[in-house]
Length: 267
Image 1 (cartoon, rainbow, N blue to C red):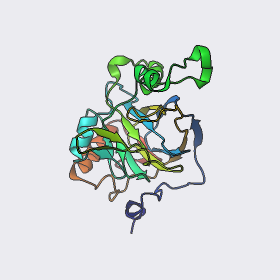
Image 2: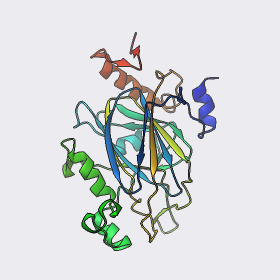
Image 3: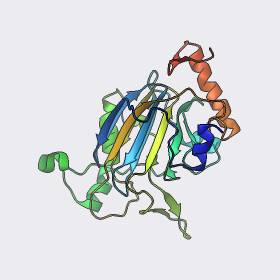
Image 4: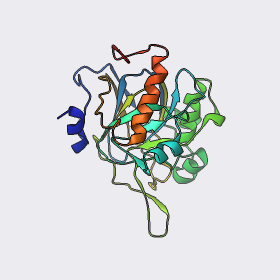
């Protein structure tokens, strides 16, 4: 039995090799923002440092940023309304930016977007940089735009994001309700990147979080080198569309003879 099959039965088990040898680690404080260019064949592990974490994420093709994460195609292709282990994040060109290879929570929100400054001020009060410096209250939208600006992107490039660690359900009246007890301290999500990607992150509160005190959780980011994608990889075989998506992505790199984790694609 492959390690991928084993992991699919227990989402808390990581399938990434060399767990004792991370490439690097970075702590993203609650309410802050982060961005980096991540190479194909890298795994990012996100670990919630306390309960109630929310990690909002956007993904772009690092080589051509007009290609970016497409939420409608991602959900439609995989016949789902949320994301978890075995799912992938599609670009608007039908290629796979990253795969969710581990998810101890079992559910990440894929359509609620991020908080904005008006909401944060109304819910938690005004606490800006001039008065509070690094203890200011930041919204997810502000965090995204600050990081996107570092890479030549702006408001027109904002699209629907993923909210890792967050679960949202509809009540009997059809209202969306954030599940406050969903994320526990130590919960983990691992993304394996199938393309060189620009990753934009914000750890600001989820837009439906009803808490009255601004205390978003820290998230630890750890990078690992991934093994080449196996033919029986759980993300690759979870549905027929994903199999085609991996093939489409691999062809993109074959044209440039791009290497992947020291393994030549197609060799």
